[in-house]
Figure 1 (cartoon, one colour):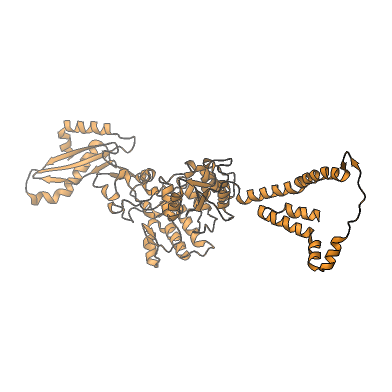
Figure 2: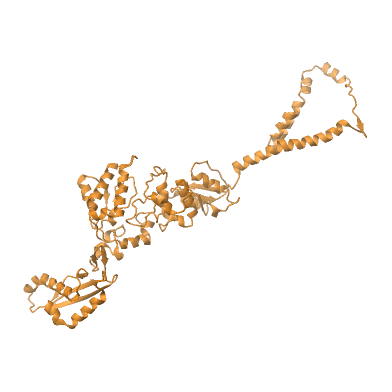
Length: 504
């Protein structure tokens, strides 16, 4: 009873329960007396109380202290120490371990998972979280250690916000808004302030701790993720494009076609970035033939991505239409639109895909500016914008298009001059029908005087009375003939008017 009773009291945690259990143990020890007092008759109890106590042999004494008292003086402290070290101390250690596991670490924070799948954290009073098999578990476990060995700046799995209001506001944003807010320049987040969290997220999603940067996840930039549950590829494509938007080509109008996870779209960071504008300025308002497009690595990758969607084993909508689109793009180049219309396939238009497709792909106007009628009306699209000029305004700026490049006055090396001639008569009925021949004569004379051919751009000849004039522009397109040479030849022609008249 002593052994069991001791364990009974040791394993009692609450002080109140300890007192109650001690009283209960005392009752157990006195249960025989209590039963006797309750069940025995009055004469019986009286008889027992009148009995003389049994005589016990006296124990040896040493200077007035008997052996029993001496033994108990030593035994009780010894037993108390044994109970403490072998029963109570292990029990206390176990309770400390349980408390640390259940309630240890930093609990003064809240967390949430935004639409991007990134864990957001904020310092607060309170706690509580549910176990999760994803990165939430790692982020929350890490957050519990903040202030107990690490700081918020050491976090690898979650992003700490300023306060709970910021956290609440962030969780209310949709996926496009949260992407735009956290990647305002459409750059590689892995190289920014959240780089450590981005890197650990990529390592977790790819289950690859050897990932060191965006170069290691470039193969996944074209991978399709099925949202909102990050299905199909476990989110590898989504997170690669979200954290490595620049490296995955989200700022390139003709780069990788898949922009799912990038802040890409009308009025969004990728299309508003300076690099996007710069790359648009490098495009030309000329579309290649089907054969030229087939030789384009970008065009071929777009076709492959659309065909992969159509041939996927996943139950995507409009898969057969996707295969037809890919085949038409490969066979007909920018003429695929007319071909699909003839087959009754509604694919969308130059600036927007059919919304029934479960993809987020770039649109084709950068490749097909002529077919898509790129101009001022669609300047905010991905249409070419050479020198910041829309395709329909190149003629107004007297720009020359030659060998897949544009040359514009004031923007590329050029020279211009005007050739005048005067007719012998002022009779409009005779002169006006001759305007085409006069234009041709002016152009041929300029070619003869300058020695230039394809590098020249002529304006329409004009007439006022007997005078005709044609303005021409020379552009320095290669090393064979430069602006200085043309300037010298024009100066020489001004000095020898008779030669000019003879050429005319």
